[in-house]
Image (cartoon, rainbow, N blue to C red; front, side, top):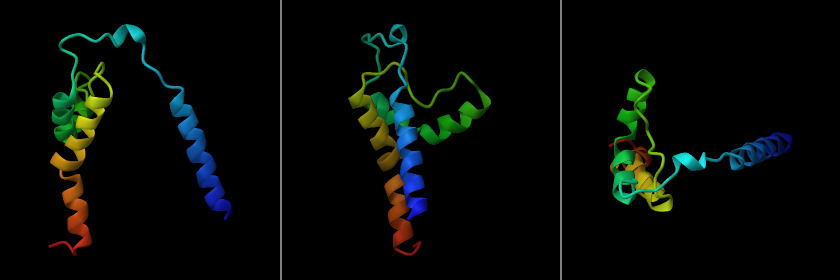
Length: 98
């Protein structure tokens, strides 16, 4: 019981700390080239490759800032889970690895 309370307390503190994060308004100006849903989908799909590249080259980013917000995030999520194989691998593991 005490470990459950500790996990909930630590998770709550981390979420509270994350809620304080914000972007500098000067860098979040939206233009016609601001990435939207389709770019989010693409960035989510290439995420594993971009992440490995970002370990070696600081110019490579895994997430586009600025973006148009919710639609970009939705595309990014779909790109990682659906196109990136996230749901395929988890369902394959449940079936017994065939």
